[in-house]
Image (cartoon, rainbow, N blue to C red; front, side, top):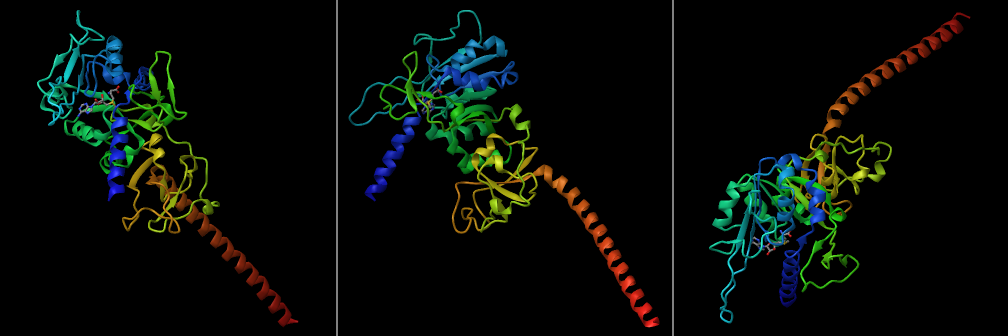
Length: 367
Ligand SMILES: C[S@@+](CC[C@H](N)C(=O)[O-])C[C@H]1O[C@@H](n2cnc3c(N)ncnc32)[C@H](O)[C@@H]1O
């Protein structure tokens, strides 16, 4: 019990740590360059962002004209935690709107911002009112509220481009969206996202930490992703397949509890297997819904984790090659024809041999 409680506390501390990962302008630029056409005449809402410091807000005000934006709004949450020992007055949440009009600030200060009546929580009525007028939400929400953040975007039918942790794919709510082709991974993933700015109190340790030229403390967890429902070029590019299943069956073991083969790396997906294949979650980074179909996540027919000889590989996504369905049908037809031709040829050969044998016997008999 005690150990459980400690673990929970540690997990909570870990969670709230990544809630304070601030996104670098370079990472925003590197991703956003692929979506420019989506922003014309649109209202963008960064609903977990302090407009004074957010690089998301900064990016959109800097590129306001180039993107042809209508408006960008950033709102900031302020925790209102009062208890028996702490009865201080707390600052309310706040927001700032930019429409490109004269006098508006691309980097507002504390005297420019407008305070909410409440805390500015993205789930609050005040924030939802802004959300309703927005077309696209772009932000890095607190990871501990990632599910709720996405659920709200879906509920209000918003376009979005947000940062999350790769593990979010394994959440059943998020995977459902991916399976139904209502959300997909953006362009950059893992090491493709260079790192996050962390506050002073964040302890820097390990090789994945540094201080940049401006003195920002940077942590590179290499486990972040962009989740979006804005179309990207990547979803329309086929994964080039080079490996073969037939002849190499030993490299593709079958699951104990599902009629499918296990694949450890996306690059090992065979080009000639038309059944179900279990692939690692990183496959989603290359997923083209015209090439592959997502069947199921993680579980076999018995609803237990997929296993091979009793051992479970890390989470697998069960997929099927859509293109092969058509190719295979043609191939099977072709093979059937070839087999029939072969059988006829063999029968012909046998007939010939028998005729020769019969002729020999009959000539012997005549003698
Ligand atoms: C991961 S940080 C990212 C900040 C900023 N979006 C960025 O990318 O630089 C998440 C932010 O969400 C804020 N936050 C936490 N809970 C929130 C809530 N319920 N509603 C809105 N924002 C919240 C945190 O204060 C923190 O600034």
